[in-house]
Length: 155
Image (tube, rainbow, N blue to C red; front, side, top):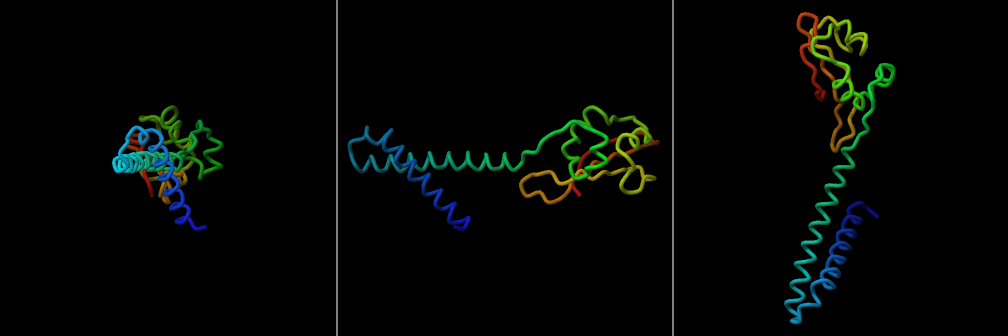
């Protein structure tokens, strides 16, 4: 079965289940058949809408989740595709404004581009997010051989 057919079947199942639920909860209290059907349909549409929005929100949350790990210099050096998991801890605890280029080099290794530049970049890997295909990059900016800025960007 294709993905479109699966989605259609699930949508129909949710709508039908919502109709049955509305009929049991609300519909038995209304005695005129025309009003009962109308109220059941409106209740089913409302419940279906809530279920669909919650499902989409859950899907986006699951697709955007990624684990966080503590910074480890050995893992940083050996697993460049997994650096995105450590970058928050790195920025919070280890990499500080005012540190020298030598301190940054000993912590993160050599710059992946030109170490003579005043802007060093380190590839963090592709963060698992919805529709993300570009790797994140940690950019460390220097002024007078001292860290003057730290930010993460997409390449």
